[in-house]
Length: 244
Image 1 (cartoon, rainbow, N blue to C red):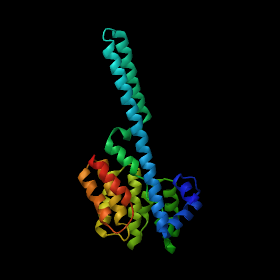
Image 2 (cartoon, rainbow, N blue to C red; image 1 turned 180 degrees about the horizontal axis):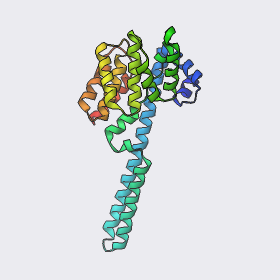
Image 3 (cartoon, rainbow, N blue to C red; image 1 turned 120 degrees about the vertical axis):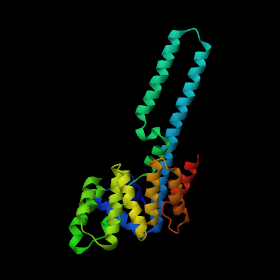
Image 4 (cartoon, rainbow, N blue to C red; image 1 turned 60 degrees about the vertical axis):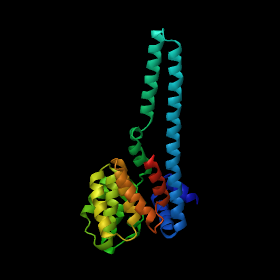
């Protein structure tokens, strides 16, 4: 589906993106295809970073051998040391900050805001305008506005729970992990219909970001044990990575 590829690359307009989301929401195969694409992107980024690090290590090994051959040349040794230092600093500059820690990298590689399906679909007559504004802001990554608007909207029942879920995701996008975790834990207690795996997935990412491997593994295992297909492949891969 060409539209799905364009959706993943954020090349669609808001209207086109909503049409794709409508298709994803009613088609389980499309949802699974989207999950596969996102997983492939994550794996590709990881492989690229690993190749770059391996290249630096190989270059460092070659330079070390040169030093051992010419121990009497202090000038060349100093130049070599400066060259290695420059290389390390260049790699640190080119790579994103979160790549410096393995768990931070895992979090960054796997966190993507949840697709805007509920905010597009849910339309209560008296709340239509407010939900439209929240939906548009979420699509445009205006997460501060999403959070403040949800706080002002007096929704009821299941809609309130789903809006709180999107508030938690918006908080995570703003790197406000503590607040997001509190909301997700509350939603987990309410057993929000059809959102069990989604909640577990984002709780596992927060745990990974905080270097809480056992807690992350617990939530990931709950995804594998569920009947829902959401993020099963990603959960299995992440559990293996946490064991390394």
